[in-house]
Image (cartoon, rainbow, N blue to C red; front, side, top):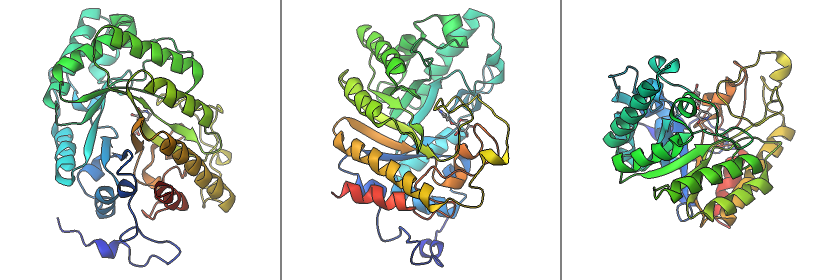
Length: 364
Ligand code: XIL
């Protein structure tokens, strides 16, 4: 496919500066940490020319938003569908972008045949086959794996799930044991939301220490980072960077977005299974974002990236959960059909004021 990049930005007014010759996130941060984005199917297949031009220009890491989750990559007991996963690996090779595999063991987005599995032996077989097959196929082809996603409750205890109930409390350690064997050339991470919060963080630290005590490799921890722009837990994020890195592992922020819409429960729990009903009151910026909110949003990214830069020697990667605002999952979660503005690029792929702030900070 031939891309005519300059055309993409034609018609941009001077106030909406484009990024074609001005700056790049990955360049600005290249001496500090990787800057990533999540890609959907159309983006992996380069179907949207604007995303196809922007992603290699701006990002040094990619995570598949959905296609490596077990429901999609392992749809039947003996059936795997590697088509899209192979494509994202090829995409990474083509543009020299690191791929983070997301995710091997997670209680959500499970294949239908797994969801109501009662027999513990069958769960064990699924667990073992899945990790061996998927992690084995992409060993050294993906740079890293989120080996286990979201195994903890908010109070730091182990989440009740098909895995903890059928395999017992060692299942996280076992997942890393299998992944280490199947993927000796790939970094292995534990990933979760809200693990910057003290109780859940303590649970994550205990989990990581248990893996390490068993003599099994864990290379990093991913803090998802689905925060509200008005409520970023900066102090807890700082404490988390310090405490997690003290375990001798890298810290990653793996799914960063700063929502500007009200949360029905006034919470930051990014549980994909939560749902609430739509009302206009819950969708206040359908016609555009007021300047006052945009300013707070920009300040939120500024505060965060100042902190990330302070600890650049402990941070491996910052990944945004999506390329532009229009493609963010936060338009449909936890309420369908809202208009959110959580990322650095707007619906037309134009960089927002927060983008320029983040790039400028790296040069200071
Ligand atoms: C989300 C995707 O963005 C959506 O497209 C999908 O419908 C649900 O999952 N935590 C995670 C991600 O680890 O995998 C989730 O991604 C967002 C929350």
